[in-house]
Amino acid sequence: MRPARVTSAEGAQPRLGPSVVAVIPAFNEAKTIAEVVTRTLGLVARVIVVDDGSSDGTLDCVQDLGVQAIRHDRNRGKGESLLTGIQAAAEAGYDYVVTLDADGQHPPECIPQLVALADPRIIVLGSRTASKDAIPMVRYCANQTANFFVSWAAGHWVSDTQCGFRVYPVGLFREVRLRRRRASGFVLESEVLIEACRAGYRVKAVPVPALYASVLQRPSRFRPVRDTAATTAMVTWKILTWGLFPIGLLRAQRERLLISQPDHP
Image (cartoon, rainbow, N blue to C red; front, side, top):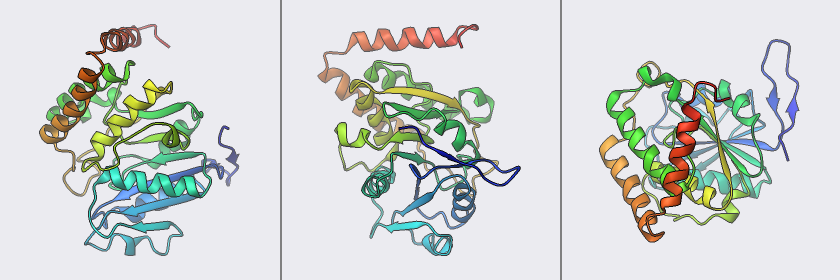
């Protein structure tokens, strides 16, 4: 089922139909959450904000905006917050979930481009590869390392495995098995790509801008060394369990080379 579109006022972007909900995990994002939610509400039928035990009044900033608010009694990590929001979306009967960060790193105005590719067997992924110059070098190198290993385990090339700006079919989370307790959302977001691809799902990428120092009002919570190490450890365990999965490595690198060709569509 593809999401319907609802015509909006002249000059405004179309609002996506009731099958699409946005899930925004937030931890101490009082400075930015209201703006992100407001911009997102103009595009989707409902926004679910999962407050992951914030201490700065994050939820107070959105109480009057008409969102569905869920609060963790303590900080459980981005991965657990994503799963909480997705479970709420499934219980409410939504078909697709758009996930984006509360810090302004993911421009909500790109949601229609991602949702345009939504399909029950596809994860649509925002890809920042075209904005290499805007990505801090340490983070770029960490992302490239994660891309290599996650794509190897997935058996398909994924151009930006660390971007959390995505569209998931809700049915995916009833089919794939994930380890529920993840202190880092970056690990869970990598694991879902691997398990989805191995279950027959595909990943499609949509170019999105890389926004860092120009928009973030706090340091990024991505810790290049620690988070990359945690992701690599999870992926390495899977690859070793699967006998090094050489077919996956070869297929992923072949797809990467094909995508890099100048005449690739």
